[in-house]
Amino acid sequence: EIVLTQSPGTLSLSPGERATLSCRASQSVSNSYLAWFQQKPGQAPRLLIYAASSRATGIPDRFSGSESGTDFTLTISRLEPEDFAVYYCQQYGSSPRTFGQGTKVEIK
Amino acid sequence: EEQLVESGGGLVQPGGSLRLSCAASGFTFSGHWMHWVRQAPGKGLVWVSRIKSDGGSTAYADSVKGRFTISRDNAKNTLYLQMNSLRAEDTAVYYCTRDRKYYYYMDVWGKGTTVTVSS
Image (cartoon, rainbow over all chains, first blue to last red; front, side, top):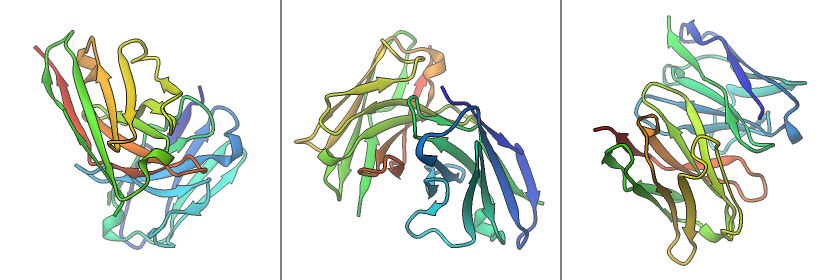
């Protein structure tokens, strides 16, 4: 089973700032099958990024994903008020599919 | 609009059973792998189970193997999760999700249904 470790646990930032979220896999993720989801309180997760760096339909271009070996990064270039939420990475290249524990982006 | 709507959650005693349903609309249900993902109160997302498009292959998390059964009725555009021998640690919001065809990432999620296991 691939373990995904997200850091930091909480990121305290102000609107307009840049957010950098990390997701480290315990082993290689097949085909770069790594996705990022955003979840707000009381809502279902929403797909942001798939295949490590491809934006899902309707996702603003301030969200971007990158990959370096087993390290994956979600970057929000300039935080908007609606971006404060919890973010999860997930690998779907092998079974069982696994999620990271989440990073909360909160308003500073 | 592509949509998934879960139902069937509720309060059940430890050792009891519950069947969740997920009604799909707005897309060709029979063409997609489907999953159940759960989230315990205040916790993260955990994959529970997967079924391939024709129902011929299933997979389960170790924590539910032997207790939960995933199934689908492609004629009714509905996904199911039969949950038996429920435990307190099964308490969670259960989400139904769809895999993007050919690409396998979870692109559509339902709003979830809440299962509470308590005496």
